[in-house]
Amino acid sequence: MKHYALAAGRIMAAAFLLLALLRLLPAWADDAYQIGAGDVLSITVYGHDDLKTKVRVSENGGIEFPLIGSVQVGGLKPAEAAKKIEHLLADGYIVKPQAQLYVEEFKSRKVVVLGQVKHPGLVELSGPATLLEVISKAGGLEKDAGAMVSVTRTVDGKQQTVSIDIKKLLEQGDTENKNNMQLLGGETVAVAAAKEEDAPVAYVTGEVNRPGMYPCAANATVLKMVSLAGGFTNIASQSRVKINRSANGKKQVLKSVDLDTPVRPDDVIEVPESFF
Image (tube, rainbow, N blue to C red):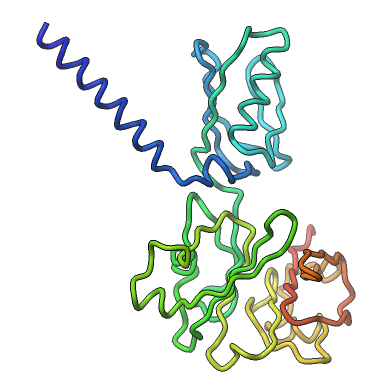
């Protein structure tokens, strides 16, 4: 009996530990994160062990689930995707199903890091990431990096930019408060050179030889900005260049722009890879 009691105690302790760890998961993993292509999902249905599934989200945002087949979960929060699976299972398959869905691997979220870092470009998030962690993944700051870092993200359909004193964050170990913000993916992190902090700039990313932040003169065009970024790579699609622009607090995307299109300060020029 003593052994049974000991085993039961260990099981209860493990259960409490699991609950505690779940509470420590970042809020965005459940409340803000939207499922995307490449994510690996773990799905269970209470009382139906045969439906336990581990699946990777396809490029079009779909998964295959037992009994109900293809399910579109891309763009949904984990709780929303679980509710959708419950609804589909309840339609003639299971009475009052209870589904749980967790994101085991985060593959769909990327952050664009530009400017004075050692390896500017796209940083893929494999889980929760702070500003300092993302900058570290980009190789860290260059020696001539300025004090301020700008983080641009879209919130409720509107583009917002936050400026953070990165030198203070590093020197004072200020890693616990809002300055070391969590990044969910889709943000642009720009690290200006010290001498450029007060000058207008635009950003060039994608298939150029030196992605980064560059001075944006009054007569700047897409071609001139790409030239500053070292020109197109040999796999660049010059006919599908996009400009991400903030106008009146709202984000605009200009697609397939001409190379002589004027560029405004804070524009983000994206050069995609050619399909061929």
